Image (cartoon, rainbow, N blue to C red; front, side, top):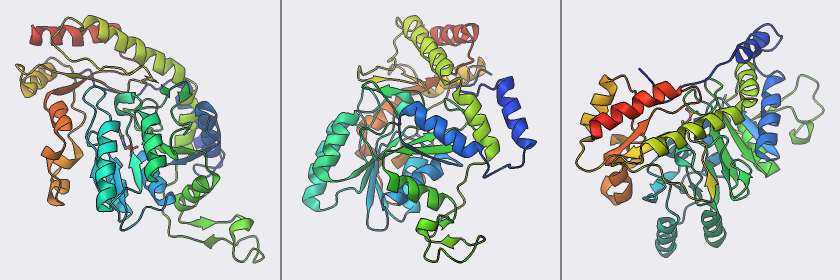
Length: 382
Ligand SMILES: *Cc1c(COP(=O)(O)O)cnc(C)c1O
């Protein structure tokens, strides 16, 4: 089976992890800060806080921004459940803003309209979390302008967008947001097995996230109520978690980061090749806004109405093509429907979901394998 996504692991990656295994620290050693520094330099953000997943990074981001009971976090219905769940972990409520039918990203027009309504009913969001779906950056300029106007914070869920750029800035620079969160799950652009990271330009947010990542415990003399207790002394200043990344994971991250440009080049070339060779088929190919350069985590196509998606999915799977669907809209999930969400409130998300199929795309996908995807799809649509 050609999977829809998979990691690329080199000998250098393996050696990097093995050398940590032979070293003094498996966790809380030098590799995590080295990865944070390398990543923050890469995206041109002054602060980076690594964690054990993007889910925990989202949770830390929301907490650092003060999200709690009585607050509302808005995000896109076309995302992985974690984007919304992390707000529920804070005791906050969640709501969704429908997508743009071309980019499948949270629509800034729908956002503007929903904000105007929310202002009238006194229920403005504390945080809005645009998700750079498939690696294509959202309309961050408009979202940032609305955040100024209505006074909410912005967290970018860039789980798909490691290596993407927006208006000549790297995603993660946080020129249009407070915090940007990345995922290093093996299907994503680069991997630490499990892992996540948050970047920010604001020192206080970085400090809060770093504190909460490790039990709310600190040894920093400047943060201690009683700095003169002795060398053993630490204080718990908040209720935090164990959301730490290990040095094994961070070493893999440092090694992977050195190949990020190659990963992105390979994905963009393969995406361009799909664009070219699927152009004659009755498919909606992933449309790209000129303000962004996608990292192409996914290559989602939409099938024509005459084609039954389930049938196409099963035929492709039977032919060894591991197509997938990203995503079932979050408000469709039974858990969310039980708390009152109605899928029909997000018609663009439903329209997209009804016909979407993600084709295999990853850095090591060979052109021969890509050709077999193209051939199988051509047969089914022909
Ligand atoms: C993968 C993903 C997450 C969660 O990432 P983990 O590292 O697995 O916790 C969150 N949001 C989006 C959009 C994702 O694709």
